[in-house]
Length: 211
Image 1: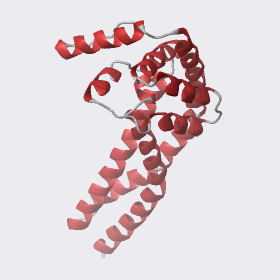
Image 2 (image 1 turned 45 degrees about the horizontal axis):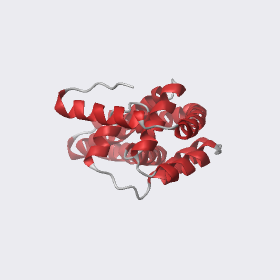
Image 3 (image 1 turned 30 degrees about the horizontal axis):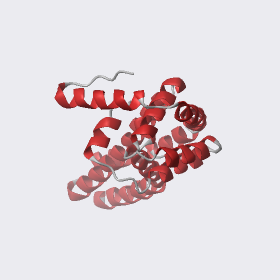
Image 4 (image 1 turned 60 degrees about the vertical axis):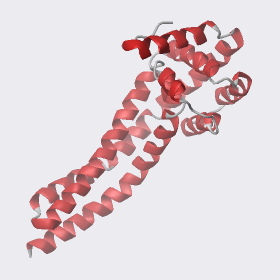
C-alpha cells in the first residue's frame, strides 16, 4: 500500500503507514473485511434518508437569505447573517455526506485501510472485538454509533491524526472524524426545525420593518 503526501512529514507518514500495513495479520484482515461490508451497506442505506434531511431545510434557508436581502437596516443584517450560518451548516453536512459516500465506493480498499487503522490503534484485540460487533450490527445509525464507541477514550496524538489522514477512506470511520460526522448529522437534524423557526421570525421581522 502506498500513500502520497508532500514534504518530509508526508514521507514519514507514508513510511509509518507502510510499516503498519506490513504488520496487518490475517485475523485483522478478516475482521476489517467484514466490518467494511457492513459499513458500506449502512452508508448506502442512509444515502436517501440523509439526502432528505439535508434537503428539508433548504427552502427555509433560502427564504431566510431572501428576506435578509429584502429587509432594511439592522433587521436585514441579522436575518442575512442567520441565513448564512444556516447555509454553512447545511453545506458542511452535504460535503461530509459526499466524502463518506465516496469512501465506501470501493469496499476492498476500505477493508484494507480499516485493517491498517486497526493495527495503528495499539489495542488490536480490543479493536478487533468491537469491529466484530460492528460486523454483526444492522441499521445505519447503530453502525456509526458502534464505531464511535470503539474509539471513545482513545488518546489521540498529533502523529496519529497525521497518519490516519493518509487513509483516505478509513479516516472517516475513525477518530477524530467519526465524532465530527455524528455531530454534523445531529446538527443537520436540528437544522430543520431551527431553519423553520428562523424563517418565520425573519418573515415577521421583515414585515414589521416594512410597516
